[in-house]
Image (cartoon, rainbow, N blue to C red):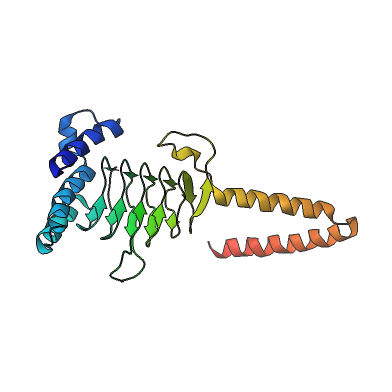
Length: 233
């Protein structure tokens, strides 16, 4: 597919993905992600021919106009949608597949300064939540979801969800809509719920004579905690 066909597809893709779009006028003036992709398509086409200054200049202009920084060496697939886009950074050796949705403040970055491939490879139909950081030469499988503000430094298998810092990979069993961020589990919440229930079980298993000692120590801890809270005022 030539560059003009890709650009036409990018414009059509916004209409298919954003229910907030009401007119072509909005499409031209209110979608920095679209213009960042358009300028990147141009810069990348020149970059792969061996030129460096002109595509880097086009990239710099795109960053200035859209606040989205895409290195001209990055390979971006078809029908990629950068929603809102403020602060998105995509490194030189990044590969992004088809039908990927990227939200604001996402970084597809490296973890070293080697000349080899040092940025992630994103599969098809991936959703990357706002503020997520995907770092290093890792692979995000097809149909995966990256939770908002997650920091991903390891491969994410196909059809899985990665959440947290550092991101934990969770296999999704239930079907969900592509933009269903509300179904991404809160891993930290589940861990705390488990710990609280475990403490409750342990306290219940203590002999009655020991429970008095536990209550005394618990009261002392509460006093320490209250003193700490008051010291923060």
